Length: 536
Ligand code: NOJ
Image 1: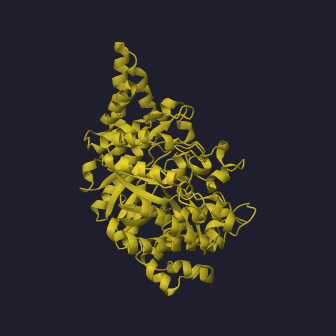
Image 2: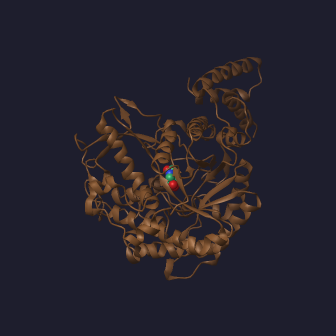
Image 3: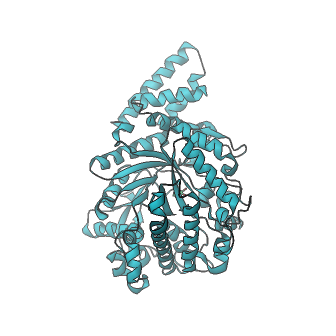
């Protein structure tokens, strides 16, 4: 039976007091326990993770802050993009978002109430340097992040700071085309140094760039994120070249990272004692069939998506598979660059949500977009013999595949010699049809199941020897989900879009309990949570 129906039934009966209602309530609860236990098999506890393993929640500046032109912040690339009708679902934008800029203290109290060890957030480039290198540091922007850092530390919460998470001053786009130009490297290094100087005394965990691989794909292959550049057959953009530009953009992003880390290590690391990583979108690939060609395609796909970003920062150059298929279209690092690029991360920050099947396109026919060098000649699908790879979520590309997180960690552990890893994002958005009313959104049993199953798979990977040091739920509260606007929700907290009230979902209570190492079986715990939610 569907868990959600059971939870709804139990919640309905909580308010009634007749004996019959109680009987029916306990009947449903019993059914729920049997049902839920069989889903979970064994259940996961905080104590299944090593001592010192950090648990946290993750957000990003543009997705929650709002205050888009306040206190000196300039228009950024997403503000500008949102101004054109049709770019973002329902005409949404991040102008107000969750008003975190004004409500940060309340949000930090919520974060503290969850009992997490760490909080990952990002710095709005346009708030701190409204004109990039071409203007002054905005002291109001610095003050805002100082207040966040100080309040986190006061409460014993470790800040994990992402320097750049998709948003930058629009002026850098207008002046020289942002990431298509090597000038953006200089702007990035200036921004990173501004962050090290102003915040580095309190930040021990930096990540330079969020998901350069996904950003490049979305902005320069498919043209769906600003600056919306692409060419046929990938999309219908007014300008762009989907075969070439992504390679240039990634090259600039990686060099920007490498130069910023070189500077950090030379001028800041000794005094500040922090470490630096990069955040990579880590979609797992499994071969569609057990045929050798599909197996090879899965490996090639991973090299083209993950190795593309990580190989240069660990080994100093792009994956050999990419050079083989892209030849001279793939930019080259000079010898000097290779030296500072290699070993330029202290850890890998893994964003993992899902897994897909991959099919070879070199020896069999594929769609026009799959059969392209930029995509490594692989076709990505979520269906095998008419069966979906996992339960659907609010984003069709991200079905629920719990085993994938373990597989991904295994892959990274092998390819990068067990470099330390943090899971900087993992989360669930429910399909539209599961969210009919606010109560449905609040009773997010599917999100709890998602985290329990993914955490179980992760704990197994750690028992198998992987050096994973932390796990961050994406995300603290429902937020601006880029081109999908506010229509897709990943949060532990629901945001009432009229009042901007933060309303805990069942999953927030679950995370709280989990972090206290509540050792009850999940089904019993969930029924308890329903009661708590009804009380509140
Ligand atoms: C990864 C991105 O870093 C984040 O900004 C986004 O909201 C989540 N994935 C969910 O799509």
